[in-house]
Length: 374
Picture 1 (tube, rainbow, N blue to C red):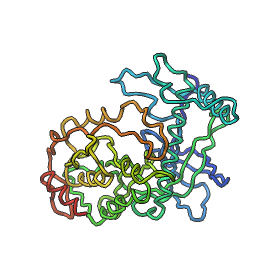
Picture 2 (spheres, rainbow, N blue to C red):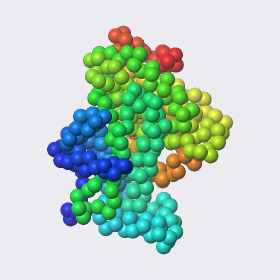
Picture 3 (tube, one colour):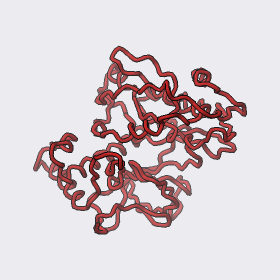
Picture 4 (cartoon, rainbow, N blue to C red):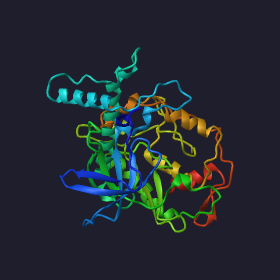
């Protein structure tokens, strides 16, 4: 593979130029990339020159289709890989330009990728471009709606813009957003039996805020223990923060109450300790609100995440064909997904963590009952 077709990321010590939406350019030094990248590239960066109202360290999240992990299915599948090439990206950019100029209709659909014959490379490139553009719009749109909560239970947003790549290396300018750096670790990394004490007083504000998301017009849709940060340090945590709104839905004007209510439920990846889910509705789909998802996450403070078939469930749910990803941002257009698998066979096998310095949650029912009081 030629160097021009090698996906580009930024190692520690390198510099990134971000052109803000208002036109100002920032020179950023990469302190640390958060690897591995999945849908977006995430870096801890610092400003080359101090700027008023910006912290010394900040997160730069780049929504670059070049490195999206969907390009490479897991080895156990027979799905083909779709590596990035500059030629395909250039052809996809030309397609969008022709559409903008009225030279051709915008007839792209995801179904074009799944025909009997392999789709042309530029069609896959267009798919990944739209996927990351939508993810960027979801992140910025959702956090914008949650502006009153920024800096507390969700990160603060400092700016948006486009990353300027090295000359002659790209046909697009990847979108980027500057977000508050929250020192800490994901809830997923809080190990059972570690003796870590996470007071419920710092969990309550997040649970209360998530209960209001639907009324604000936001649905996170990917609440899991990887996306909840405990900050600043485990020895004395003071804050619990929900991150990664790249899969969020935002209620748009014209979305009726009934449609919003129906689509304000989600069946996300099963990567959390199971809890008793609400009874299925008349359509046969389990209604799992984002509040109950967050309570499921909070339950991991009490119940370890060691369950039989856990890895199999994660693999099964993470690598389903992503046709449903290309959608309008309004949740009025989100299709219903499959029901949540039964989790009655997955039971905890080790001791719980400490809550308020006391062991609690010796069984799932007790833990969930406590969380319902939040």
